[in-house]
Image (cartoon, rainbow, N blue to C red; front, side):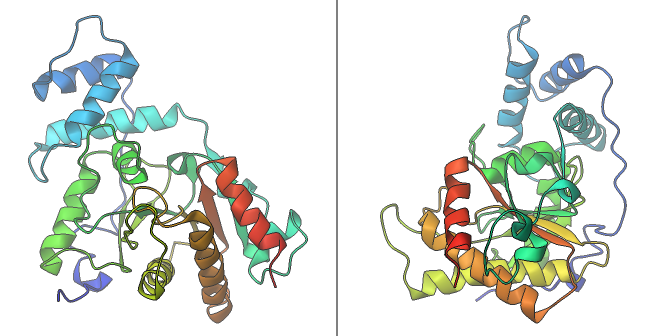
Length: 293
C-alpha cells in the first residue's frame, strides 16, 4: 500500500507558496494558432477561435507531464488566463449563506452556500477537483468531466505539479485522500484534488463507498485548513459524474460531513460552497437541507 504523502513533503517541490504571475495574451486567436502549430496539430486556415481552442484543449489532454518547453507553457497559460478573463466571474463573498435563503436546522447553514455554475468561474480561495488516482487530469480529449474542465482552465503547469506529487508519493493517489496545487490561470488561488469512490453505473454504494466519500470531503477540509490564506473553498459533487455515485446519497454524505467538520473546527473557514452543475442537482441539496433534522 502506498503511504499517504503529507503536504510538507511536496509543498516546496511544487512551489505551492510562490505567487503565479500569468498575464493574459492580448491577441487570443493568433496565440492559439501559434501554439497549435508548435504542437503540430492540424487545423483549417479558416478555423474559428472556439474550434481552435477546442483543438488546443484536446491536444493538451494527451501531452505527458514535463514534455512542454517553458516558453510554450507560458504561451498556453497566457491563453488560459485570457479565456478565463473573458468569462463572467462570481465572487464567493456575493453568495448568500444557506441560513439567509432557507428555513432549516442544518448546523452549518451560517457559513455554507449553494451555487449552480461553472466552478472555474468562481472567485474563491480553493476549488475541489474530483480527480482520478493518477492525479494527472482526464486524458480523454475535450471530455466534459470536471477534471478535464479544471485542467484546461488552469493551464499547462497543473499537470506537471500533479505528476511531481505522484512521483514524490511513489504511487497512485489513495481513494479518500487529497492533494493541493496552485490554481495558475484560474480565478481560484488553489486547486485541491481528491479521489472519491468509483462505482459501477446502477450500483448502490456500500458502507466502504460511503466511508471513502466521507474521507474525501474530510481530507479536503483538513488539507485546506493547513493553508493560512485559504478561507473560502468550493466543493464539486465528488464522485457523482463518471464515478456514478448516486446523487442523493452523495449529497447527504457531503452535507453531513462538511457540517460535522465545521462544527469540530469552528472559525477555520469564512465560507464553504457546494457547487452544483444543474438546478436539478441543487434541488437535491435544497430538499435535504429543508428537511434536515
